[in-house]
Image 1 (tube, rainbow over the protein chains, first blue to last red):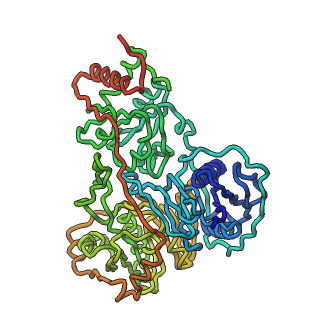
Image 2 (cartoon, helix red, strand yellow; image 1 turned 90 degrees about the horizontal axis):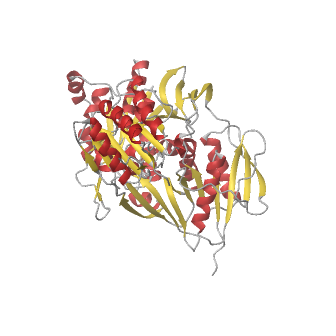
Image 3 (spheres, helix red, strand yellow; image 1 turned 180 degrees about the vertical axis):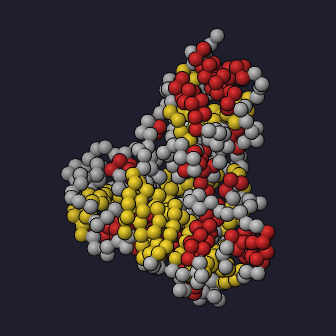
Length: 321
Length: 268
């Protein structure tokens, strides 16, 4: 008996992430035949088809909320006969995924970094981050629908088109949202350079005052890097628009130097893919030292100026690739 | 106004260690406690209750092991009236959908409930399923990821922390509210609060006897066949340098980073 080639539905509010999901869907198929359908949510008109998808569904919704998103995803999954649905694990995606799982009576996992659809096209296995990054869980689902929220930046974004992609319009009927939006304040644009910076100087609560960040900036300057930070520096102290870590940005530069970072797992998840991690902390028992390549037990206020001087005087630069 | 705060007795994941040889997790002896996010939930709920004053009630609802009972002293001291602990027949191993079915049944027994306050995620699981699933199942609007919460004229108003914006939104009650990370730093409690808390009840409910749910049905509702867990092993050099001469220490740091392949140059 030959199994019918499966259809995988992908959906993200972000075009680049939607193309990453196409790649994760291809990886799930593992070279076997199958159809990739993409759902694009629109509040106005028609949006471009998603690169790499065989079919693009376009759903016009009243607002880009988790409620209307979930209604549209469930409808598209039904229209496409998709039993595997991939959503990007953005804030909106993480609010939408569990709702879709309820609507489709589907299995669900968040923070997914790997997907496999068995040759029988029935059994889905997902790899996901567990306990904030301490562990990886490999979940095998019972046959049936499965919804996965895939961690952004895990897969390369697809670029090629698969021939002439079909475009299908969907009519989403969803009661109007009961949320009344009174005001909107856009967030300060994130530092675009941080994600691709070759070096990141990662600052933590060891800094006592905002003006002291000049120390970190001088180190970033001599290494051609960018400043990043742990969550309290952004969410409590408001010194930065974004942070590195589980709930923030994840980077993988050649070098991360942490300054006054304790090494909590929720933060380390954001930097642990760096090629090399150097750490400066005055507490010799700080957890960061067991998670770094080279640690220095020193007061960053004394050490960083000496380090900047030494890098300058010795003519040290970042290594080549 | 009847408020229910959902509180999870969570693993202190900062204490979970990985056996470097086998990648196995060392979970034995890892402390459990009311989660940091959950303490923010309690604080947010207590403030809402206090803002209403007379006639407002606040219960905490938790799905967890029996030994969690002692952990609720702080929660009661912070201003919760009583705690309902539903003994978890799956000991935290069930999928989010099953946990929400149990919580939903417990909430039904606690009706009328005007506001359910919960964390946007739990400290340990962090999969962010409960608020959305609960809102979807109960048909209540969800105020997600809130950083403030006020009430007036049957309406809840909150600041929501979203991906690209912060927005002020209002919803009619009954509603579900999920609290953002560190949105409501928990208050310090006094000895007097602790003494008063001793008089407050912690009820223990069973899924089958008190909620009328069959454990077999709940197990059958699961979509998971198998979960395998492997710790993430850190393969770093873990070289630690010490010294009192900062210039000399900086030199050794640079040399070590050159050796690790991050820097080049610096030969003298």
